[in-house]
Amino acid sequence: MNKILIIKTHAIGDVLMTTPALRSLRTSFPRAEISVLVGNWSAPILKNNSYITRLIEFEDDIVHKKKIINLIKIVLILRSYKFDTAIIFHPSPFIHLIAMCAGIKKRYGLCRHGKSFFLTSSIEENGSYDFYYPQNFLNVLVKIGIKSKDTKMNVFSTPGDFNSVKELLLKKGVKKLDKLILIAPGGASNPKEKIAARLWPVSYFIILVRKIIRDFPEYTIVFSGAENDIAITAQIHGEIPNTIDLAGETNIQELVCLVEISRAIICNDSSVLHIGIAQNRPTIGIFGPTSLRSRVPEIQIPNSIQSSEKCSPCNHYGKFLGCKENGKCMNAITPEIVFRKVKDILNIFK
Image (cartoon, rainbow, N blue to C red; front, side, top):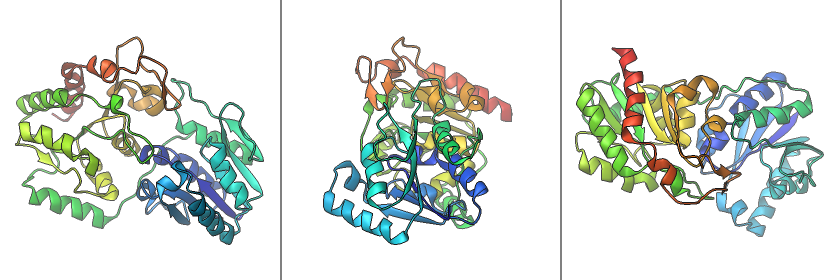
């Protein structure tokens, strides 16, 4: 294999979870051209990734809304690279079809319910609640003779990204860069979907932040988020003005740096969770409808929280198998429960 195309669309966290497989692929084929076809929403998380040769970006809704003319253009672009192998980290037959139309003869990928019509070799996706999902991507590589259980994710940044973050924090009045707690109260959205049920209540975040400030006044609380999270962070910041709101003010690489210098990260099941895990930072993920064990590696599980509701988790392959009552399972995770996790982490640094 000399010219390999990886295809992975969808959310930032999903793309980040493919990085263990990208690393294994590069290790096995050090001289190969490895390109990644990815939507422009999540492409930045692969910027500066040393395991790939190039990113081929496209507008996300081209695939989600099946814009045929634009899809034909993508196929023609892919044909021009003359790839000999495609590895498709997506179970959708429609995505598989893109690779076939691009004239790629060897097509390996995930499938769901045996639907692998357009693949030359496939492996069934494991979507069980107790299976760490990144292993699915490594399992695809078994089809080409690569065996690995190393699910450590990778993120990359530059000294310039670190300098930008430090300058931004100093401009906001942060004096102790080693005393930061990063909170991402939004997320759970991407160009394809928005799952409000994955969001912990804003009122709970407000209670939690007040508890942290009361017991750990030496720390600065910093909020992060994309532009569509600004309303959420602004609401919390409005109630507690002695915090720093950076929602909409950092790009992905700067967020990676912000996570790296934080003593603790508190977030929903979102991209920030995976960025924290990738950098081995103490990351408290709050899980209701989605499964903690499918998204958090064994070593980090003690930091995160799964709802105590009997129906949790209920989100399977992106669909709610349970009650669909937004907030029921997340409401069961009280601020006191999360605060105990925060204290356990911060007391280590005392």
